[in-house]
Amino acid sequence: MGTIQTAERISHRDKSDNFVFQRSYLAYVEAAKIVSGKVLEIGTGSGYGIDLISQNADYFLTIDKFASPVGEEAAKRLPNVEFRQMNVPPLEGIDDNTFDFVVSFQVIEHIEDDKTFVKEIHRVLKPGGQFIVTTPNIKMSLTRNPWHVREYTIDELKKLLFHFFEDVDTKGVFGNEEVMKYYEANKTSVKKITRFDIFNLQYRLPRRILQIPYDILNRMNRKKLSSKGEHIKLEDYFIDKAKDSCFDLFYIASKSK
Image 1 (spheres, helix red, strand yellow):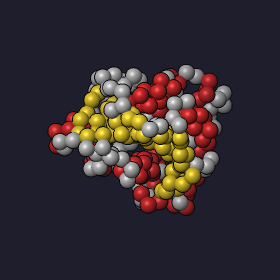
Image 2 (cartoon, helix red, strand yellow):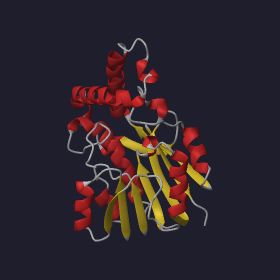
Image 3 (cartoon, helix red, strand yellow):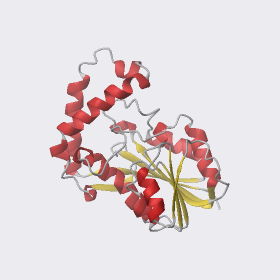
Image 4 (cartoon, one colour):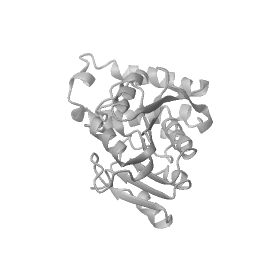
């Protein structure tokens, strides 16, 4: 299967994606400070985190549901990188207790069986290994995203991870004043679009029916707000203890030694 091009696949080259890209890239920057040894990434995406993470890994396996020219190119260019196309869960062909770290950013919300997903990650981690995960905080979502199977509250994701992991550090990705100005402008724009949904169909219709219309409107809205968001920098985001006002949940789950 080829790559899929939707607003869910964030590009560092599209200025209209900058607001989301900088916040997503921060997860890789923070993870790169932590990871070492053998590292598994679930969700290659556009591949913009490969170089950063692989610098601190002896071996870096990045996997994605879709083909990734960037992942394949990186595997040829970097001797410690491997890319595999794979549907998950399960993590087929990966032995128990293999990896020191697993990173998965903006993926778990797309997984139907999230409990098996987390169970598999726990299985392939070595004793003492860590799972670094990000996902949108539902409290800050402006509308339903039909590409997501679900979104989590702080406690819901923590509860899920505690099914398998012994310790979970619950942090979040926050934005400064410049970021919040864009967020408020985005909220106003989204309200103008959703005011036509008088029957609340965004929550009543099957999500797959809504994916393409949502994607078109989402991309149009980002283009409209591009001038407000293209100046936002990585430094405008920061990690702190998770609260309802964070954009993403940034959790580190540790497997017992």
